Amino acid sequence: MAVIGIDLGTTYSAAAVSVDGHSAQVLPNQEGLNTTPSVVFFPDTNGAEEPLVGEMAKNSAAGSPYNVVQFIKRQMGNPDFVYTSPNGTDFRPEEISALILKYIKQYAELDLGEPVTDVVITVPAYFDDARRTATKQAGKLAGLNVLQVFNEPTAAAIAYGLTSQNNGRVLVYDLGGGTFDITLMEIRDGSFNVIATDGDPNLGGFDFDNEISDLIVADLAKQGYEVDEYDDQLHAEIREKAEILKRGLSNVAQSTAIFTIDGKTYRVRITRDEFEQATETLLNRTRERLELLLENQHVQWSDIDYLLMIGGSTRMPMVRKMLEQISGRQLKHEIDPDTAVAIGASIYAASLSASGNGSVASCAAGATGSDIIISDVTSQSLGVIVVGSGGRDINSIIIRNNTRIPAKASDVFYTTVDNQRELNVQVTEGNDDDPKYVKILANQILPVPPHPAGSPIRVTFAYDIDQTVFVEVEDLTENKSLGTFDIDRTANMSADQLMQARTKIDGMNVD
Picture (cartoon, rainbow, N blue to C red):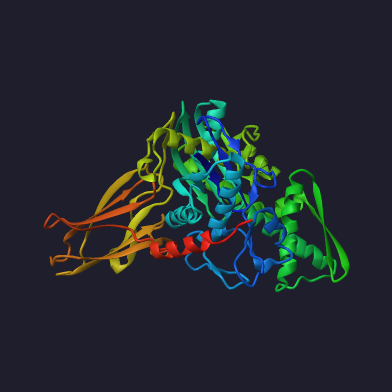
């Protein structure tokens, strides 16, 4: 039975398979293309849902914007997002992603001529706990056994490192359709040692498309047509043509789109200079993140042996120009930015299968699959809310971001009142000391023996390769444990919700 790697992207997804654990083959979809738009179209059937996925769905977006769901990766881990289809069915982000994965599973099985169950699915390195869990749940809903969710930059580095057999310090700049990652790592003879990672899960080609859309609207206004902000069908057409213009501007200095509105034709011309000026702030956000990561790690450009550009948005000339300017070196795409992540994921998936590590629990950092060794770090800091000086709540970090995983760390805090009877343990995710700027992963109320104010309480976090957070709280006055727990992921689907959603997805034909 084949084991594959899937790059579940914001705008496009891809799948690949590796037989030998060293090279891989991209699996073409039913249209014969290496990438599939991460788009789902829901026809108005007045009955059973019959969603379309991929190219046909994307081509329907402009004509039927309310029937189409795009960019769902940006909503992963968001419990408040629900899409209601024209037939009245509610879908959470995990379910929409599951339909995309189900479609990929179907064409992969056609390509390979055998069932596909075990997969590695990639995620941005900077994805937090809720987003990673949502991705695993989407795979489960699609009928897949997710061996591991795996960081996209590390997957790309595997694709590069094993095919080129180069060793050294690598910086991966990953600007995709909806997310941005930077990862610094060391490659040595099949060992991939992640040093640090940073990124922005809400920055990608989608945002560059938005800027072109604004330029189009402004150009139409100059020609005498004011776009109604409530004209969703026209806005969908503008977004579709904005992406086409963006792709064109990667190859030519000027690109043109034609609009026919109310029987009148409008010709919109956008130059590369106009586009680059409009998106300069977006590009600078990636530059600032990159330079801050290097500064925090005390790394100079002279310390970096290879700079990899991955993600389709790195095809924009201004990205290469910016990276060449700050790095002082000439750059080219060493690997295909569209398929490198899927290729690396499939090689890693094959190595897990070959080594017998066919479960998440056994895939610990440093676990060896074939001749690949992965050593990763936390992308997010973990901590607890405590009372600081002046009675102000602060976020106290226990495990800092970019700590090697699996990790375990403790800190000691003190009760605030005499004979305190309970403790509210609020597990946080984020780097800020202000609770307003971090995410609360879990609340757990634990009973506390009555002691004088100022009695010591130790909180211990353990963080494993699967991003599972284990917490223990100890009363140091009596030297006994007050309780242990895994965090309850309130942002994700419960076991009952997953069971119901699996039945729903299983009953749908996906084309």
